[in-house]
Length: 395
Image (tube, rainbow, N blue to C red):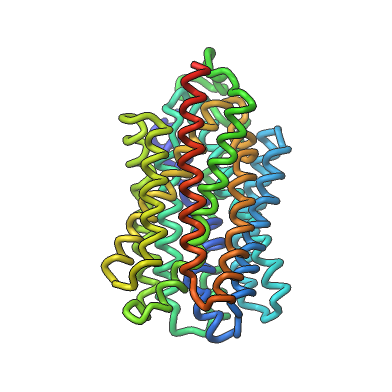
């Protein structure tokens, strides 16, 4: 008879490793490699922003596929395709210098990241609920921070190589995480409760589906969160490298962000348990605003490391709390509900990098984009307050 604890660990690790591959490498390896690509491959500010936008466009495409796919077995197949795409799109970045092919590969990498963020989290959450276990994604989303740390550490380890060889090396590293992410994620039809041989139906008495107004507010709020998340996630290394006192420390800041993000989802689960989910999200948004503003007002190493800790300690928690909330509101097919919400998050991730690249090109600085991003996050806090008021009215 299978060991329930060991099975749970394998499922959670499959989710963690899928995030390290599809988010940490297929998506975020671009962040520490952006400065070296600008230096060695002649990538401009504007092209750098559009490549990031292409990646997030791919993420939206993957989210759309997840949103219109109701069958969990088909989602599992798409999840596995996403793992393959994550490895291949990362390695292939080192095989060309054509900016249009780079854009295509970043788009494919973005599609793969939706497999880790949406499909894997939905499969894990569905498995937990059918196992009658607490449906939280804190442990699963430690993969976000680990992925960032892995991308930063591995980029540092291969920094002496040419930019193209760095991409190839990171693609090869992706195979390490590909194998358990592929093998340990159970097919939805294979899920069995610990006390029997067949999958358990979801518990009765699940929360009623939220109103259209609630969903609209959530989507608008999550758009703001996506805006706040993506500017730092894409450009922070390049922002730091442009500061006289921080030159050469960009990869270190990226690693600090990843390490701060590792425990953050678990921490925010506890904070939400004490304060409630919306108050916890309000606190996380406020701290992330501080993290965004600090690099715009100071080039001091201490303040920028503080910014990295605050950013890493909030963005994964915001994602985890929001997606877990959606999963509990839509228990029958959580990844589909998450995907619908994530379309607004993804839209922000296309708009914000393109805006940032254009502002940096015009001004020679990222400061204006950082202030604009902080303003968008403030709007998000206002929307969260409106959401809390609506929940009180609706009971």
